[in-house]
Image (cartoon, rainbow, N blue to C red; front, side, top):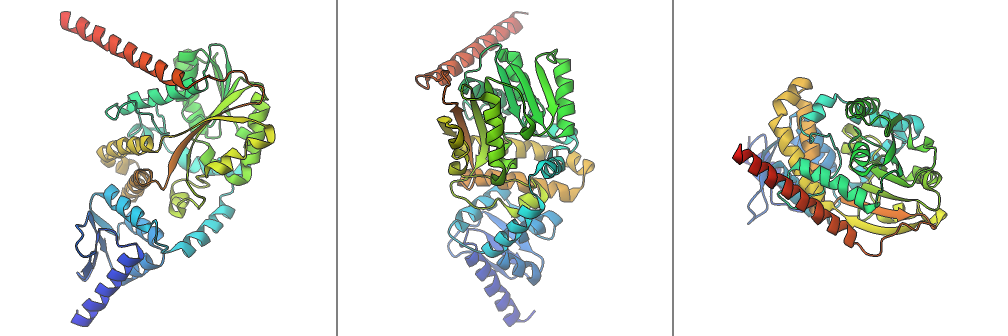
Length: 422
């Protein structure tokens, strides 16, 4: 390697760093040329195999890095979440690769349309993976959505139960009420609403594996008479209900189909019911990561609040409450990623090493996105124009939460006394 070659490669590396907004990272090319922002302490080092990889990183940094990391040609030394965090922050004002992202996003919009048939196909690719894979890193009830941490040191299991209680309190769920859930996952929330709040629940989902699992769990817990799990699309919801709940499904609907979802909600609760939407969103409209859509979540889109609010306008529904749980999702992903890493050998045995790197990157990138603010987690509570089930203040949310925490503490104290005296 001649000095001129080394100098040229170093200039390319510096240009790449500049295009990324000069984040505090170190780039190293195979020939040992390297670059880092002057005066910065790099949080991680990225090893690139050749000029071709470097050129790709210059042209379309997100896709090039994610593909290279997944196939093992790009290596990272250091904290992956910290790396993605600082790059995301620096790129908020950079525009590297935007043309490529827009081009790929348009193609994905056509090939991953969330029609009745397309939605089932998209959901199958992600949620119908072996449930034993998800058991390795989710909580005991397999809740695959943002948890709610009453305190930062709460366990993942505690936080997911707290999230389900938070949802039930927000819609002021009462015994005997009829609830329809759109996109029920493995059934944890539907079963929680029936078991702990006395509701009668119909839950819709197009994932065959999840519905089968949820039905088995409901039967095992003696709740089949109270919870019905239906293998069908939200567009086919029928019947009359007191409340509508959807946690983590709106991201898979797509703005082109919001009118269909809104019509299904209005058919279900009419003008007198109320409901809750829990979804990943953004502060301004732009496509979701094409790499995520291509390899992890086909058909996914994180909407802005204004797009979701327009769903309620044709039916004169009122928005009662909007909460952003962005940092709760970052914390949830921190737990998921830690559990995933502990199980990485078992994941590799189930799939392969590329799958491990791909899913590590997805979880780490998502955690960084919520920490930085690229992604938000919104909960919207709404009600029909004739709904009388509207709280005077928000006090009920937190008074009941404190009462629940006190009861849990009392139970733990009694258990500890019983254990020590036996």
